[in-house]
Length: 588
Image (cartoon, one colour):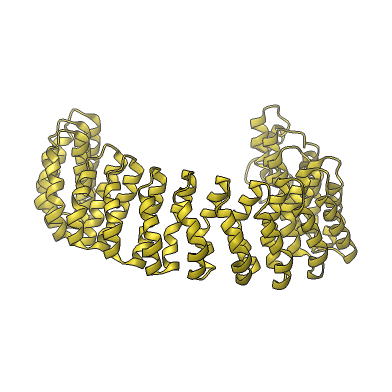
């Protein structure tokens, strides 16, 4: 009993709690089944605990879900893989319950156990379980059965394999749409285990039945099967059998099926190959981009860059670009947003001239879109365009719009612009930055929204790193320090935040000569929040400045603050003083 980690009394309590009326106690006990099993030993677990759990399948869904999860990793507690079959009965019961998440977890656990079982146990125990579920009177059992075929099939005899394929075919034609849905979503997994000689015949016959199902919820799951089966078939068979299905699905009467095609299009293109993509799928994709349902257009718009990578630039300009222009002024803001999130990626595909001629006008119209998410998605990907068209053209065409967005009424748009500024500054150079963006950086420090002010302070640090301390000393530090007399205490606090971020970049000399006098002066502020932030800032300056400055200036300032009437100010001042003592001890 070396494995037992807990005394037996709590084990007895846990076993009792398995039968308790309180759901929380039962749940607690189920989650610690492994502890109970270790205490009971392998034999008693097999003979007592597992049968008890098998009888317990009418419990609350939350308890059953936890049980299904625990049993999936229970093989070591029943004596290893030779006894794995004893775990199947309780999981079989859970596969037939009404709650979907319990069934799915039970199927998941059965797959884990089945994949480790010996072949003879698989044939003797797992396959009969699968047959019982597949023939179950209640649809839930048949739904669960669909997820187990790929595990059972590989270890079977030829006779059993034939039987399993026939059983799966019956499930594909089941009266209940839920069962056909499960069969459609698991067909790809099952097909990977089936011999290639049966792929073109039996599996594709099942697939054809599912693609013609009268329920759109079944057909849309068959779309996923297109990509999975396409990878298993020979290229010529894929074009002959899968391609017509994709083209038909792209014109399906149900928008959900068309949406699924739009969503899976790149994977479908990979399955049928580049030639068929150019000849057959380009027209299908154009139809999806012009679909009358906004949801379909959203899915299609989000794939425009990936799809264009499969084409040559001429085809993209001829067929896809006209649709992109239409989508940029689509009536749905969500379509425009989906397009804005990917359209910048088209620039490297089309090249410089085509980007300037065709894409730049679209970028500009999206940058001025009334919906903030659209503007945000364009801003965040500007660097992709810069790499293609160069900074001169970018600054002439897009920068005026960016400067306008820097004062956008939606704070998330302003935030995206701030985060983009250091990159823009490095690309534009010092001269251009000073001219156009310098004033904005200071303006953001006094924004109404805290996240903007915080990002603006971080922005100053990144600019100081980019252009160097000398430039920052000339262009940033004086403007920041001027704000220390601002009547609003939140703005005065931002000065302290900016100093704490910039001091490590600017170095000891500038910190002592420019920053420290301002910080000491701020320690006499009437607002406690300012004073305890001064204490925190002084603590962060200790490693930057010389020990003589710490002893002469910082310590005295902190001593004064440690006698402040406000408890928070005293607390942070004392913390900083302890930090000074700790540094002194470490150095001695």
